[in-house]
Image 1 (cartoon, rainbow, N blue to C red):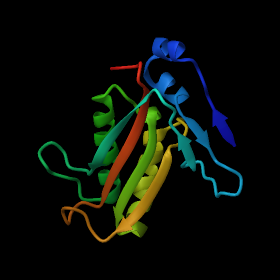
Image 2 (tube, one colour):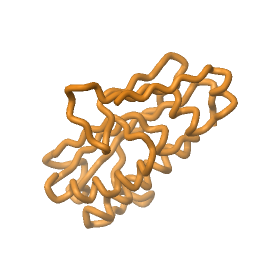
Image 3 (cartoon, helix red, strand yellow):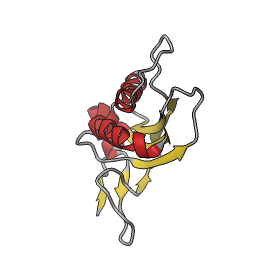
Image 4 (cartoon, rainbow, N blue to C red):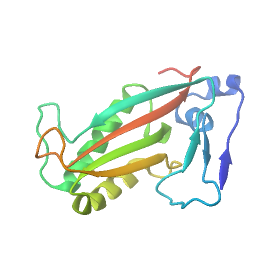
Length: 157
C-alpha cells in the first residue's frame, strides 16, 4: 500500500508541527516485500525537508544511572528519544527511521517492541531495523536506539 501525501510548501509552512512533517514524506510498502504494522519498507524524503539525526540513546538518565530490567530500560530509552525530539520541536510522528541495537535480543526484543509501539502510537510507522549485538558501551545497558526525523524546512521550532 502506498501512501503519498503532497501539499504545497505554502500550506506546509502554515500548518507547522507534526502534521506538516507527516505530509513531507512518502511512505511505501511495495508489492513483493514483507510488511508489518511496525515499520514502513521505503520512505522518500523530498527536497525542502530538514532531516534531524538523533544519536543512539540508551536508558541512562542525566546522572548516568540506568534501570536494570529490559522493560524499564526500553521505556527510559524512548523517554530519552522524546526529550531529544522535543528539543527540536518534533514528536514521534515526525520519525522516519529507527535503528535499535539489542543485547540478548531474545530477552530484550519483547520489551523493545512494547516501548516502541507506545512511542510510535497511531503515527505511520517509520523505516525500522533491530539488530542483536554482543554488548554496548557499558555492560549494564541492554539497548540503544537512534533515529532520523523529518520536517519541512519552512517549519522551524
